[in-house]
Image (tube, rainbow, N blue to C red; front, side, top):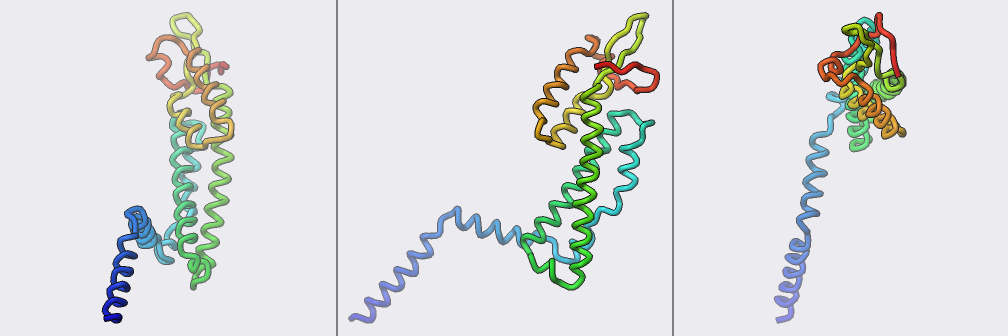
Length: 203
């Protein structure tokens, strides 16, 4: 009679262990499994690089383009670089073997290049955004009157500040809001981005 009793106890204990796994634990296991499944392998990661940013950077630097367009180019480029860096970071953290597999030197070099490229673009992008926040408006003559108009679309500039997210983000946003209040009351005038050519910049 003792053997069946022991077997019963073992069966109950085993069954109890299964029941003790909570839904949160199951979700965590499934999430880890899906994360590992979605992590790029060496071949997929080898296609990620930051060597194709030259044209986008030239567009962002082009002083002959409207400043709103230039800021959007910086936003798109910087965001793209951040995503590529995140891909490298996630893949290599989840699969450390990628640092040591055949051809890993290329992956490590590509990752370092992306990190450096992102840092360089951020410095350039942030410098431009701070210049725009310092001088966000221009003086324009309309109907014989001098009025203050926006140098560029303020919502785009606000998006740029949010994208960069510097330590003084709130201060920059506050300064931008103050500048917005100084813009000419006529909404149509304020919405037309002003070219810096032939116009006085205002503060």
